[in-house]
Image (tube, rainbow, N blue to C red; front, side, top):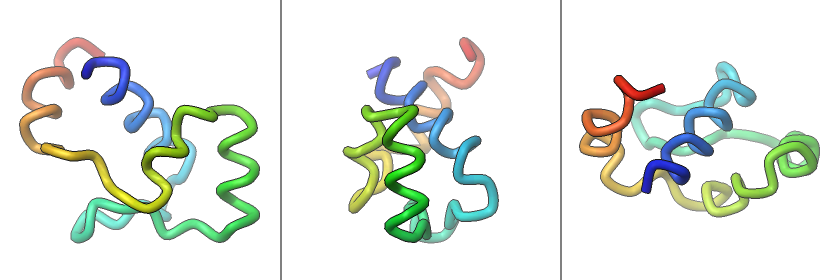
Amino acid sequence: MKKVYKNWVTLKQLAGECYNEVTGTFDLTESEWVEILEVLPEARRFKHDGLRHREKMTLLFSSLM
C-alpha cells in the first residue's frame, strides 16, 4: 500500500495542475500520459482510476513521505 501511495504522490507532482481534487483523477492528455509513463510506469494504474481510499492512505502515509 505504501508503494502505491508513493507512486500516486509522485504522479501528482509530475502532473502538476492536471490533478483534479474533486474527482481524484488526472486530467492529462494522451501525450502527457506517454511522457509520464516513460519515467513512472507504475502510474498506469491511475490512468483511468484515482487512488482508492485516498483520504485513509493520506492519513496513514503522508507523515512518512
